[in-house]
Image (cartoon, rainbow, N blue to C red; front, side):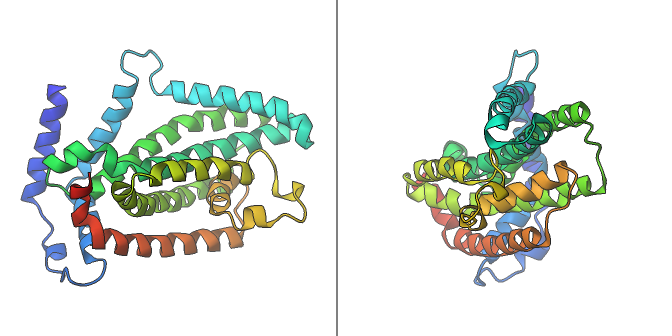
Length: 291
């Protein structure tokens, strides 16, 4: 614990000595500049801190455990296996085609939904630290994204096992999971800035978002395929979770996401980032008083 504190303090000391002169010269009165400066300083000056703390969060959760974070993968894998064998006769098709579809969808959904839920409480959960430490608030958003990227990397073991079981060899389309993962992470950053700020002020936001997320799971093609609901395409076409899941699931299945999916995700990412950045810039100085 002392080593962890010393490493964090050393990272903070180094960060204070190398402030970015470029960002400091930008007029803070311009819309979004305060939030952009916060993001830049959190990335450039405090990266070592949130990388270390994010990894420490995972280790602390599974301290004294033999398998450590792989318990997340085991529990998720057991859940996917049970659903795959139970639901495959109900929705039609064999297990060989349905189980990979469900598995890769669940891996993507787990990453996306946790970004949304933890993004709502990112500032609330770190309230005592925020009130005592003068640092960019974006470091807590980065830390949340980094923590779930580590969990996602562990859950990729499920992809490896299913690929070996059913002979799904990686192709060039599989590499598209990397830009998809980046776009989803940027959306997670936007959610942290927007919903995290709103949740700090209005504590009803997290349970509302949790309820909506649970409902959206049923409306997102994970346990069912889009072609199995003819005449009800609006259930997934107007569902933003569908596009975020599809842009990650399709490469894992060895196919490229459609151009329409890429277009929607890029538009969501751009609009969401701009809106959340403007909102975060406007209210970031009040967050400490709301906690």
